[in-house]
Amino acid sequence: MPGSSIDPGFFVASVKPLLEAKDLKGLLSHLKANWTPDQITDLLKGPDDDVRKVAALALSLVGGGRCIPIIAERLRDADAMTNQMAEHALWSIWFRCGSPATNGELARGTHCLSDRDFDTAIMHFNRAIELSPGFAEAYNQRAIAYYLLEDFERSKRDCEMVTELMPCHFGAWAGLGHCYAHLEDLAEAVRCYERALEINPHLEGIRQAVHELRGQLGMGQG
Image (cartoon, rainbow, N blue to C red; front, side, top):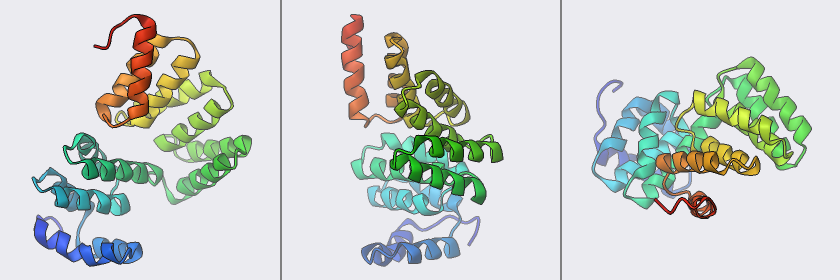
């Protein structure tokens, strides 16, 4: 029932057959018919690893903006699968946080980005931002496009906008670090990389970058 807590064992048992069948469409319908995203989010606070990872996977399908802070906490979960599912859930939610129209522009832009059609990708991201100025992922994807065009100043500005709109967006913090590294502000790059790692400690490439930059700066490993 809406507003009531979910029995964790019943939740896992009810979704397990759909997971085993890889029936994501059926799972989506089942979740929407039975529980609210807030109810599922509450399961992330429990002690059982299996419950937390299944809840995180479920939120990748039905979670919304209200769920993000608690999902982000699970990036530091002691269970490796749970933090992987939490990361997947965050990316899924970030990509659908806009209106249907802005989500469509974002999807078209990312398709163009994967085809390295950067100008068309930026056009779609611009449209998404015009429609929804608070849509963080549109700025993030445009930042990636600018970065790939080696326009690091514009990419940096978009990354900064993402971190204002979505402070837990570890991808944008890492992107900001990349921009500062290319702009030869290594100390600021380290700061941004370390913020990304505070949010998501499993970014091994970023951890290695911090190690190398701290060495160049003579900062030690802290």
